[in-house]
Image 1 (tube, each protein chain N blue to C red):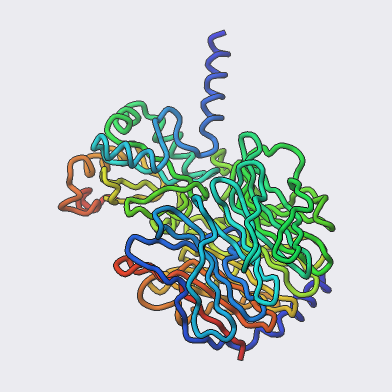
Image 2 (cartoon, chains in turn orange, purple):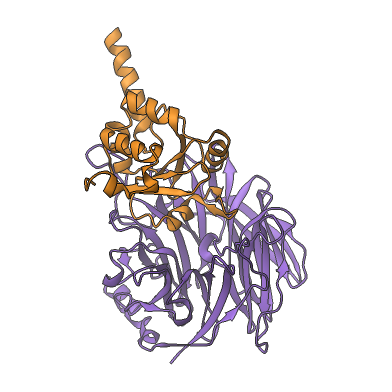
Length: 163
Length: 392
């Protein structure tokens, strides 16, 4: 009986993550809500620029964002924003310009998904990182961002040449 | 198949010469660092030419909220006249088509519904009863159609309406969804085209395959639509159990030649180099064939954006988009040359230093190409620029 319950739970989890929406269990919000929250609480923004049906997003969700400790680290210390690379949903940039979520990809010069963008609480870009990344990668990026190292070093310099 | 190839080759005849461009003009009369004009719309129908008068529509926030505007340049005028505001409440993604003799029909989203109006004069008519976005228009002779994405339960679906014109009044003859069944996932960004046989074709973004797929449907009379087919010949499906398929977005359609249709869209089947521009043709069978990549090899490793296709009854066919292959965003075009699109050519006034992007274009009855684009300047504000090209 317990085995059946576990299988059902597992199938529900995979069904929920198969479409490369935000990873399950993370408190992702949309861009406008995230910017408002970040300004209010002073937390940096972690922006997940994903695409509906994106295989590498799905891979990242399953391999990396399934890590419970990473989920705790990012949920507690960042405002989590999810943007759909092909959506016509509107958002307002810190400049006051209204664009679509898809147009944000143009402004970020996004060429692949997933794309991870770290922003200050005011919405200024700190660094953007494309493609699949590991749990350790995201821990390194967190140290770079919340440690304030981005003010003195590029990400590559901070990582000692490790990409 | 051979007949189709021959037809495509015959339709390529005008594409052998170069475009000769007019000096560019600025369309918007108000600009500033905190004013943001946008040319985005369903099927990128932001410009039309009616009896020699050029009409351009866009949205900007000069009045503190997003509003839609129309500027006209009569044939004998050297510049665009000051724009008129089309909307009262938040307005997005306006489109315009030519009625002839200097008259136009514009449509836009306002306060969550879609509206249309004959210009000059005319009163706005609300087209949608439910929440709706991304309206577009197509006209051929006396036949005028609109399409939009309308809320239907959890998701939006594509709705097509036949419109009537009586002097400066618009009416709705019939409205129906492309599919009677409730949408299984999101449908949006419709593109419309009316072919020479009187048929109505609509393409749109569709997520029923759990990723975005450009789909298409046709109707011989605008009332009963064929089951949706894929515009893309790239299959859906996961890779090693991951995802559902590659990305694609913003299909645009144009009538082309006497019976044909052409479509382009942004396509991420090569997922490491951003979106590419892909095209497909319907030579009159109301079926689109294999996909053709539009940009040339110099643009291969570069993301393309804001693609549009424009054609005319004489067989001219031009694809436009922007990309940053030369370091900054420029507007590019490619003529159809029978079996492939030709070399990519930068629009002279829309290339070089700075950021020039978001082209919208139309071919007029004489075969001239009219192009409008955004010329971004963060300090001085964005200009909407216009140029006309003749084939020499």
